Image (cartoon, rainbow, N blue to C red):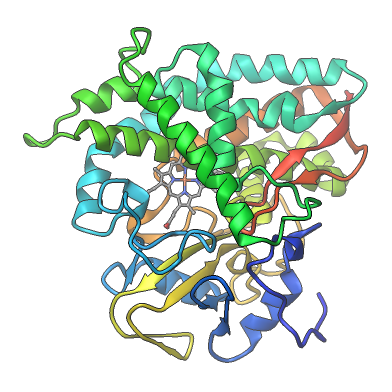
Length: 409
Ligand code: HEM
């Protein structure tokens, strides 16, 4: 890591996140006193928090900070989100408390366990095909299919809907522009592409809500019927929260597995360590989550005056919380720039903390573990055949394609 950086790049411009996130800038910001402020020409300016302890204080403080005015740099434009109070991720208490209670029954560890068998057999088949081919695009062969199948099974959708829904969910959050697109740095172009995909996803899901083939044990049916102490979700709330689940569960696990594969290819000693010690698999999954940090930032809007990292914040201020930076914080992680599958302890921040802690964490951990378990059974060496193609976003560490050869053991 360089110690000499003096100018922090434009943290809203995805091109500074290619080929890798701006780790040197964040390392410098963690050392500097206070928080960093950046103006924006076409949107309100924002503060950046980069230290683990500052992020932890903010994510746990729901009276001081709100999710309801946009959760990402590209969407936080100083106005309240129309879905605030109805969609779990962009709701503050008490609306959030109610939605979390009604949704959490469908997303717990026992639900993840019931999906284990179906996912395992699909993943084993995809990995086998990828190994049989001399070369493959790992994103298309495995990573993108994983959340498509997991979300499809979770929501109880007919299989023919899985891929189209997943592609829309992926574009709804990461957009359709790649890093080499001349419009990658243009907020208006990025917003146009996510807004279009969001609208298509909403229409697609609305059409599925009454689908005759919905599985009775799937989440859509269960949410339409769910009741807790006489309370139930309205139809609009079911729709918005299924959209939230489709989006939250998509680019995250997809990019955890693609980014994890790159990490193992670039650290062959760690792949061999895992092959000789498969009992390290759960610990390897946690290190993949820390190393890749699929969701790189979230935004909060200040509700009450607060001091964070030595900087006084006023109501209405926007604060960007850089999760990738917290995951490299040398105050918390020894040797943070080393990929170590036996890291212990590993309190990575990829699922954040507090009331919005990732509701899909058990499912996410299961999905990632099943992919690397299937690879362990068949692959001796992972070879990168070229650079990955990446989407133009500062929100997601997002891969579009990843050419590899998986050499069988
Ligand atoms: C590697 C995979 C994943 C990562 C890194 C991840 C990351 C996150 C993060 C950082 C948050 C917290 C947002 C905040 O504090 O404001 C979150 C919330 C959430 N995640 Fe995940 N997620 C993953 C997979 C999933 C999956 C598979 C699902 C479900 C299908 C899911 C559903 C949710 C939901 C519903 C929330 C909102 C919880 C709330 O607001 O109370 N996530 N996720």
